[in-house]
Length: 115
Image 1 (cartoon, helix red, strand yellow):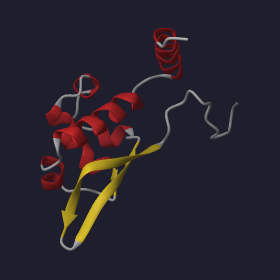
Image 2 (image 1 turned 120 degrees about the horizontal axis):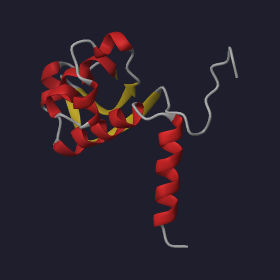
Image 3 (image 1 turned 30 degrees about the vertical axis):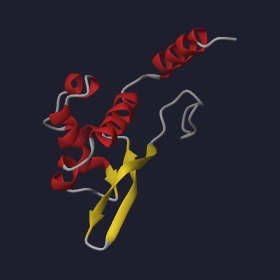
Image 4 (image 1 turned 180 degrees about the vertical axis):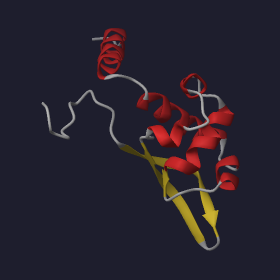
């Protein structure tokens, strides 16, 4: 499908929404959902792909302010609950999977579930 931006069902979404277990407070505003945008090469500058794929906390905390909508600050990233940090880590890892890897993972999970 040359020249189209359509994605196959197995392709990673360009953006995912994370519902925070512990919302962030910004003045009088409470942020309960954050969109996580698939990073581009420039946003990865200074980071190791391997560290992100292994869910290295330091690498994730560095990347989050670069790819969140609304943008969160370094301080807000560091203040995330462990449950919320874990949600971000899972979604960031998913961005690195190829469509073939995603399909393989789906098949493996399908074979694990009782029928």
